[in-house]
Image (cartoon, rainbow, N blue to C red; front, top):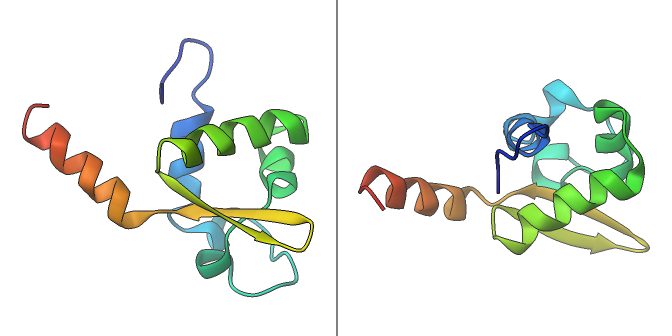
Length: 95
């Protein structure tokens, strides 16, 4: 799911969202780490359409690795550190 042949974007997204201010320009609202990144910003960074970026973000949100917050008509995504640590713990145990 995270590493599909021909598509390393999802792992890149998780890594970039660990320190979003280092990888994305300010979106003119709040703090990137606290509030998240929009699909438009991610699409520009990846060089893909907004729809393609959104599909990656939505998948990561559905499996619980990202949190999505709707503000007005836009949705912003940020890492769910608790869930990521929980999943990492399962892999450490040999799950």
